[in-house]
Length: 277
Image 1: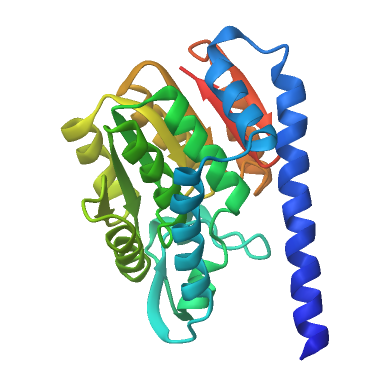
Image 2 (image 1 turned 90 degrees about the horizontal axis):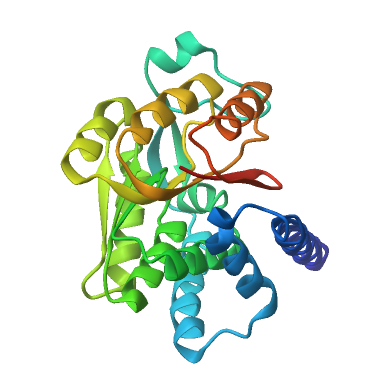
């Protein structure tokens, strides 16, 4: 048992080092980036160099306590995945179109893919600096990244997040996360396949100032969502794509988005990509 705990600790330290290295490397690259990326550059500076305030530490600690609580849970839920599958088994386009992949999973299993704390802090700072009125997230998971974004909105004294999740089990956990963190959550969980919920969300609540796309890691699907979202953006909107290294199709999708003439600023942050539209 001690050996297992030691290995888990070492794995966690290695992941933290990779996250910090990725953010610091992106900061170095951002020094010569276009002026439109100034909010991203500032967020990278803050997350790598600044000592958080007491209010920030309090908000982040509450989110991490919620993460730890879910990571300790082995109760089983019915999970459905409408996405691309795993890196070891990428589902075909037909498989993705024909419905979700149903499986049982523990709450711990659903929580493990959540955003790393340093990445959550980066999302928090992007939110604080850009001061968005409307934020969109594709892929709520269990609400960790949404917790960091809404913490930023809370301290901004304004703004709202709409976060979309395909799995009812994950969506319920995400709702519990936001409800437990804030008496008046500044986030709304939208449950259902992105194909069924995204367009209505865009029509009803756009234009959006900030979007975090972290669900359905398939290149064709990502390009489809990008085309939908692009028509419902405020000027100088920031779009952040996670897991652009997930598969060759995701790498191609990111390269296409980054070279879009409408993008007047783009930056790669290891496995993520950022564009300003």
